Length: 180
Image (cartoon, rainbow, N blue to C red):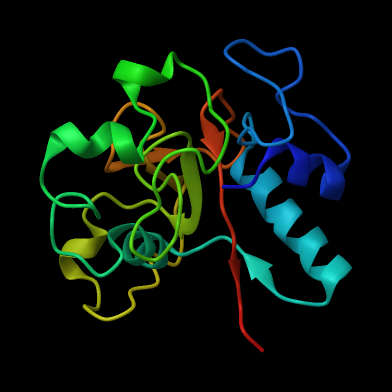
């Protein structure tokens, strides 16, 4: 997840500043970030570094989260282990935590099952994946809202829809960097 320190270094702003349910610090997840903000961040970072950064598609996000597994969570089916991998409602206290404090999944990715909800590139359509291509679906070509995945702290496999300008205390993101 993109941290407050990374956000400030790239964008020079603090969308979470003075908001409710926020702890501040370099390693805390950047929150109160809209889909539009996340896209602007990726474009600015891409131009600054000369590499292509973008939001993941929902299919890419799901693949990264599952880390090659077919179990309920990337670490298995035992809910008792969830606290080792995720900040969720029972232990999170309604605010985003520092990134990378819990165990990573098998791909080495942290906070895939919790902490903040993460914006995906895709438009939201409730039943899209029932009729989409099985391999590398790209999501609907249009829509009125965008996909937010993870669960922040409420559901470890949450899939929600929000307007692109929606922001709240658990809206954040991570990026994909395309290989040259």
